[in-house]
Image (cartoon, rainbow, N blue to C red):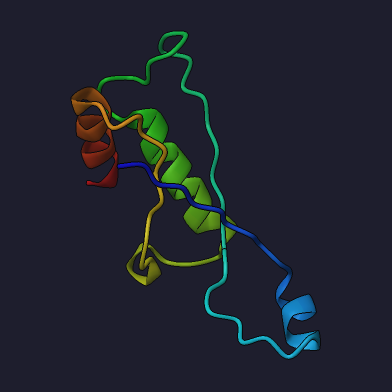
Length: 88
């Protein structure tokens, strides 16, 4: 089977102005490039961990306040292991 998805983001103020209920909010974003290899992250997850810490700092939050981490792994075993290491 096939699937598809679309995610449409809107400023919270714009949504409220048109009477919509705001269901979620992106509070922080973290982006890094650990430059380990051209298309690979460092095997210990340090670059990913830095991105997570940056997102938490960007949100002016505490790690215990994080409800969800949306990661961008390519669904390979190697990437999943890196993400788990970074989240620890």
